[in-house]
Amino acid sequence: MSTAFVTTAYGGPEHQELIAREAPAPRSGEIAIEVRVAGVNPADAKRREGLFGRSGALPMVLGLEAAGVVTALGEGVEGFAVGDDVLGPPARGLGAFAAHTVLRAADAVHRPAEVACEQAATLPVAGTTAWDLASSAAPGETVLVLGAGGGVGRMAVQVAVAAGARVLGIASARKKGLVESAGAVHVPSGDGASDAARALAPEGADLLLDLVGGRPLRDLAPLVKDPSRILSAADQPTAEELGGAGRPSSRDALARITQLVAEGAVDPHVTARFPLVSAAEAMAAVESGHSGGKIVLIP
Image 1 (tube, rainbow, N blue to C red):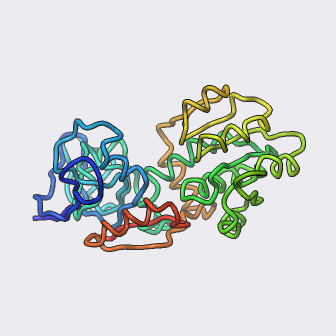
Image 2: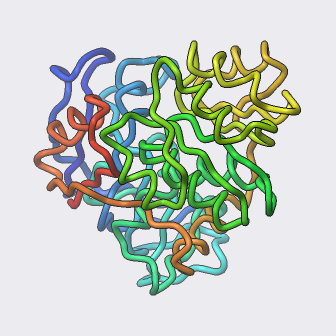
């Protein structure tokens, strides 16, 4: 038997609980893993609430990011072996908040020795989002990152800095040190953020990466020279209205962001670790929006 943290109904945290289940077996093209660390994201609460649809079977295991060790291979899997360290998103909604889960081999990557397991567990969702947003940054460009103090935003800053861009990171005053440690110039969020950014980039910005949306996105949009380079992972409708787009997608995002972590160019900045039995507390910490770094679960 194995354990998993689930929601028994769509809605609030009152439906969450830890249950026993059979360790899932891999199907064709899949690999089974023993989960060593799972990443916790705002998307986990949205999934619990049914904001991504309510077609999944209940109880539903939560968690979208897993790092662990391969325990079994499904038919036709090549390039992986039992005992390999890997990371990736769970397959078939089986969830990462569990002692065991299954990944699609096509979605998984090997974990380099230079990447700690807890770092790896933040990459399948948060890391790939950061890569997809920031990988178009070019040397010498000025990049605005709205929401630079969050887990995804800080990694997006680092991806852009690694590309040779100058980054202005918009975040709350209390996250100034966090943003600057990632290599960005801090711009306090709130009223006056666009004026402060304009003063630092009087010729405008080449790229705007948005993790906030709404009015803050609208306020900063006029600073961007080419509206098509407004990219939002938080508010695609507003980005498109402004001439930009939602988050782009690349098949090799997980491999690319993992390599940047291995090289030391990106640090996911894990700040809190919870055991699986305290998954509800980890979820609550992420939902508060004040974690100041990535939160992980250790089954």
